[in-house]
Image (tube, rainbow, N blue to C red; front, side):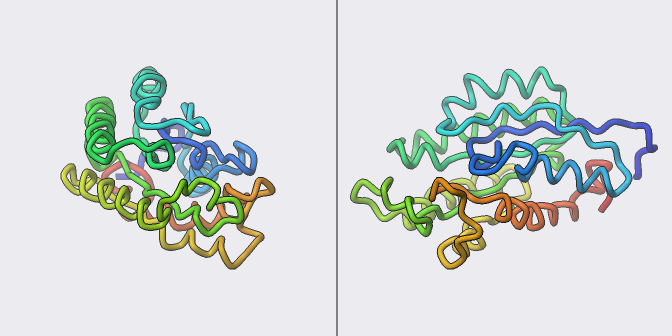
Length: 211
């Protein structure tokens, strides 16, 4: 059911560099763009919390982001984590456990499971500086394995999952999608991701947002 115009809808984020907009500005990050799109649709959506930081892992999120998510008292939220766990060599079993803990704690805070959506990890191996972080590993294959964990944990909880991994490969053929640092997405890429992520709106009837 559509909420009345004055009702403020609180949106909070847990993530890393990809959620804070590293390589662009915070205003050009996909969460900020999503809030703007939903507001243009006639709903007053406020991005009340996005403490995401470059380099943060699921353990950082547990220690530093979950408390802020809890204090924000959001109406809906998003979760995009895992790239730094893989880069830093976190074991898959530990990653799964921590990711599941984050999902469960976010769900306790939110009104229902339909109000949390998950985004998987993009394939940074296609960027100019991406191979620097391989350390003898196959980046694409490793991220694919972590994305399987993300998909499985989301499915266990009935959470909608947005695939960024496949579309992100465009960064390898289009330099305009890569930031000046040679690693992160550009503002243009974040805008394209937001357009994909906004399709999550098919679930929005459960959230009180425009479907």
